[in-house]
Length: 561
Image (cartoon, rainbow, N blue to C red):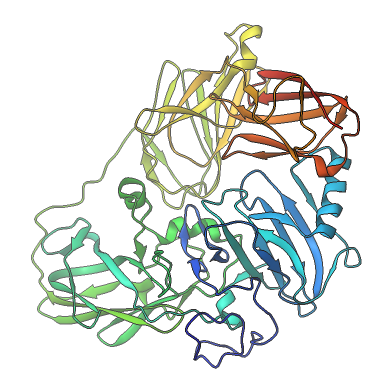
């Protein structure tokens, strides 16, 4: 048996399922596969839609097409997936490769022609089945760190013909993993005023006791009424220290299964509802994602199976019950959590307080709140639950509840600017105050008549702000009037400390040139191998604009033979 990971080989694992081909795809890399992230891991506002393959902390590894097919989509963006490639295969699946450094020469030539045609670095195209055909094992790209990647790796996906991402491990991936999932914390949730856990009607953190065999138990409970549980759990594989997501959680009450969540496949339309799976307020306050082992109302996730009473349990007086959770990774390593519960009918000694304000939001109705210059409009089903909202305005500051309520879809905040001079309006924007120092973070702001508005999914504190400082631009690897014949790249650094970079445009001798924006390094880079610069004396002009229209123009001259 090989010591290291085998990728996409014929597998007889109990997890392999006949509907997924086990020998059709090869590995996208030619190194031993070690994962930094697993499928459906809990991320900010979404499930992870693929697997993250470590690339030895470097960029430039060869990326291969996993099967024959054709390039059906190429997308290049500053954020998100960065440089991404999509290949459609004859068997109906699509493979996705993201955070790429660059594409193969043929694909690179194709996409650069499109970028010059559009005069834009950011681009999305959908080649026909005849334009960029791929054979199995062909080099299609090189691994990188583009987009919102936190470090060099290959983000890899397999999607079905309905564009639903599927756990790539179902296609035969075999990772070296003999480590059981870890349970870090467990909480109990009394439901209703008559329910309690250890005498309290409030959410309770339970004492987790590790066992010698790697399982866990909870210190014996006394409880009554309807109870739900949530836990913090991660998986670790043998060759990486990353805290990965688990594959399956199932629960049993007195020997009968009453809940299961299976991270096998999901659709992009439901990924935002991760915030209904986790205890969202706990995450916002503690930065810990607790997975709820019960299903609340208005939860549309398709990941649940074998549900009884939505995963809740009911404890009666003078009873002895056992609640058990089984947490599994894809390789079948299983951790068991045992909770023994004694029924005790006594009334709780503290009751969860119900907070009320002047404004009540009913989730299934539209609502509009207005005070001073601010107006907030919530659309039907903006929230999962109805609740009392904290809403107040003081001068140019809007307090719109604490950001501890999950938001299902965006709502509108608007500000009346009719009292401002026309000369001041271009520099005004709506900002969300974030962080310990209440930094004004630009929220995409539009103007219509005398109204500024922003469309957002974040509760919190908002202000009317002004940005009067234009972006900065400076040369990195050359000086005005210098000879740079031996250079392959021309680099400038751009930055904006206010609302951020909105767009940029670069020309050499009056003709548009492709400059790649790296927002992490704040650089624009031109590659002379594009062969657009043929003169000896050249005039570079770069114009950078921020999100409220402040603009800076940088001009310089360089020479090349």
